[in-house]
Length: 195
Image (cartoon, rainbow, N blue to C red; front, side, top):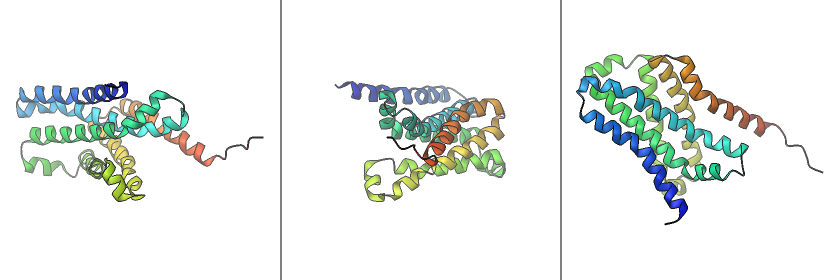
C-alpha cells in the first residue's frame, strides 16, 4: 500500500471516529439528553466546513507546500464530512425535540432557520462531490460548490444566535475570513512585471 493511500485511510478514520463516538454515546442516552451532543456535532461540522473552505486560499499563499497540496486532494472528503456531521447534528436535534410541533414552533427563530438553510445549501454540494457530477455539470460545477460560502456565513449566524460566545465563533471563522480577504486582495492587485 502506498503512502498516499495510507494517509487517505488515516484521514477517513480520523473524520469518522467522532461520529462513531457520538452515535455510541447517543445510543446510551435518553432522547431528552441528546442536547448534550448538539453543540459538539454542530461545532465539528462548522470546523470541517471552515477547513474545507480555507484550503484554496492557503494553496494560493503556500503553492509549494506538499501538505497543502495533499489537503487540496482531500477537500471533497473534508467537505463531505462537514455535511455528514451537519446531518448528525440535525438528527440529534430532531430526536431531542421529540415532536414535529416542537420543531415547527422554533423554526422562525434566527438561530434555527439559519441552521436549516445552511444544511440545505450543503446538500447539492454533497450530491455533486464526485467525478461524475463534475463531468456532467462542467463549468457549472464550480458554481454549485460556491454555495459553501453562504452556507458558512449562515453557520456563523447560527452559531452566534444559538450558542452565543462571539469570541469563540470569531476565533473559528476569523482565519477563514482573513485568508479569503488576502486571496481577494491578491487576485485584484496586479502582479508587478518581472524584468
